Image (tube, one colour):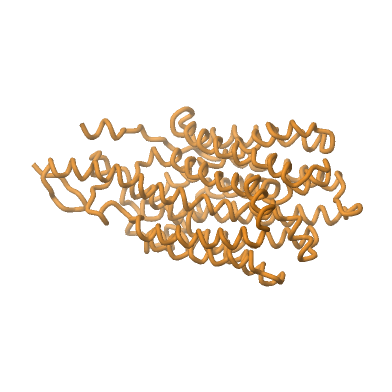
Length: 450
């Protein structure tokens, strides 16, 4: 009796052993990507902690600081199509290993730069390099895992990513106090080089690279249909652009992530320092509760999408509505919230902003297997265009009001928060009009191999 593994017929007893090895090794591949993704998020939000130092050392206005921080997001967005193509056609191992080295160089250069032009270039390289991590992760999920595990594992990825955001809050502020912001970024870049090497050593693109069967072969279920595999890239892209879901999810992604990066990624700490007069370390301690909440929210909302609601649309819609409501305190009482109340408030905001997690499964479930990573890259563009523009636009709003002494007035921050609230309402309306996708019943590893 034989079974197929990677297109090769092998004895059934040997197949069972390979299946067990595959189901173990996929977690090793997933684990190294989790570790790598921590530093994607670290680079993304770290400028919030060092914003005052950057403004002082380089003589930056709020607008120019917003431009500097957003220089991560523009190349990140531009790299999403190449990232998808690299992942689908060259594989995650090459893609992540190569481009994470570029990210490491950019991170170190950010710390070494002594001119505004050079620090902009370092930030640009950060964006280019880390852009080719998330989409390869989606390809690994499609190659090694079942489709009904997609949203939960996506949520776990974002949970670990937010561990990087946690490190880029209070721990980074503490490190900056010890060794300065320049050495902090330089040594982070050196560590990222080591991570890039580990991806080359450990990661494998698909089970057949190690002679293992796929989940479809193990379960004897054709999870990923080949429909569309013989269709050209151009035709698959055209089909994606004709989907109403794609454009509605794009609007949702732009709005929700723009507010996240505008506030958590840049302006939260200046707001707390300027409006409440608290020191940087305390502001960073408060900010840390956002990624803690987001880490739990991404995991919980991804799980709810797969298991509880069994709906991508409902999980994303309910989440963004609660997230929008959580902005009301900083709009209604921007200068009179008790400082201690910011800890639970930012936790709640962070938790429910994770409502975007099911979007990736929402799009992936409508695509041929060979196009999944590219399709997710096309959605990912809108998250980072939103992140870039909201940071810059919020800076423009602040500069429009001007500083009073060395601080922006509370009215300037309030107006920027109102802008975010309106954007979230638009995002909620867009998600309301999406069409839901089907969540497949799970088969567990224990049920497969006995």
